[in-house]
Image (cartoon, helix red, strand yellow):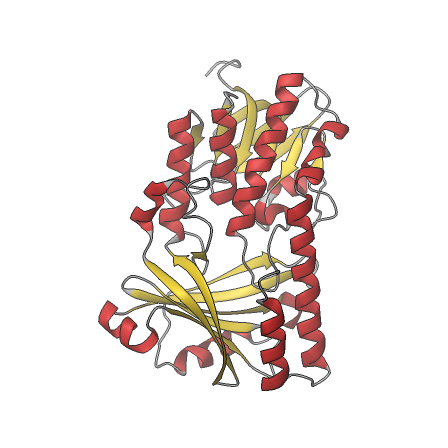
Length: 359
């Protein structure tokens, strides 16, 4: 390829929900867009696979219903193994492999170029361009969006994140247990189950899907001693022998800055996660779309200044406020456990507070 073929208006790194949504919107803005993914597509990601917003036509379109594996209308909370609180909540359950690729294909259809099996090795941002060094060559762009997860190389190479400390990320372990749908319906119905224990500052979950249940457990990395043993014990309570076990990290704090000249971070790369829930799919998609909007304005106005890219922070202000609230809620929950204030009454009151309509 010649240098002109390797030059883009925007390069997006990471073909998850946030990166693919960003690439789709950039392409719709008629920006020359490149989406790089280090794995072969379609690829899976360790995740519970639950979200409430993706069925919204404005998010993914009506065709998303083709990949939905189950729908839930209730979250049931348990404390020390006993039911304490039911919360009416409509959510969708799916495979991350199917969801991510669904959005990636939308990006391709919109005009973005996608290159998979292409790991990014280095990123150099200067006053004139962004230079991305990868396994498949060097690509040059006017802007870059990092959507490459908690261990984002874009964040590292641009200096936006030199590394998370153990209090700013959580560790989650999950497995999917095969089970016929009749048995799933009999044991779990359409309910999402969440388990909290007085001696554990995280929580466990069970998500019923199509032909399997997703079971997992997670907490802050700083408190994750013997987490695998806790996961095995949790699975055994339901008679499960988890074999294909996967672990992944999730940010529990926002980065101080997710922008600089010519560069933006979305999704987990920037810490856009509801930490009390460990949920980031919605925020990845929404922040990815905002990143695309800012890059479009920068390209159209030929303005790649810090002032231009700081607009990302301003537009994301409602998201940031919600994320900070979630972070405070997690800290309150952890404080209650540390002080021995956790019992069925306080957990019930706390969950009612979290699920109030105004929240």
